Length: 348
Image (cartoon, rainbow, N blue to C red; front, side, top):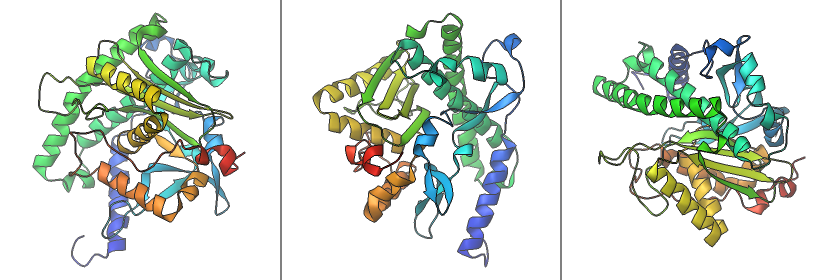
């Protein structure tokens, strides 16, 4: 806070500065699809998670409005970074200016208009869209941090340079991954990724479409953001989708990503060994690594006061400088417990 600025005034000013900062990074004039000669129509405000299918399962009534919760919208307290989550409308959930009208419609028609069949094609298209969303957000972040704004002016210059350098390093990895995906979709090589797909036999009102960068595999093998140059940056995608009678979990990576493969293999073995531990691991991944995650007000309510406080503490810890990067994150929350299913929560 500055001078005699109150805590509430400080929060308002911070939100204004952050909103202006994000606006400086806005990119709304390019389609993610590689062959621009086939683009048709305007760049659309696309949903990385189907609005009138998956998100409709999640939304619930809050003070007379249909809304959902996400991990990235929260109230800040005087002594805590994450005091409580704030609901948002599904219309703004998971959106990005990622594809032209033609590609947004045609590329994803197989998964928008058909029931999930666990085929390589369906897994690929969900993965492709998850990466496209994260890739777009990363490009906007790079643009914002390299544009002068009230927000960047208040970042210590050494930290600002560090942010910029880190983003530039990740930019090359992102572009390399995009080039691989471009080739795979161009040649319809949907088996060109390694998938771990799990079908939960009941519907959980939670959804995610994101790229993640874990610090460790489940057993503690380090990768991503460690100083050892031989531990290459891994790109892993995760999709979680509620259906009317099941929940779909898809994790994917490139087959030449050795540590990414280990990450998936360890989770696969965990699922075979103890499904509850697997569900807790996926819950920990959503809380600690996946930005584009949304869940139902009914699930939030079902957590109870203590569960809500615990979730906020875990979210705060996930972004703190004290996070232990040498072990897989643990969570006291299992989002995939059957008591959180749409039937148990009585979500239609």
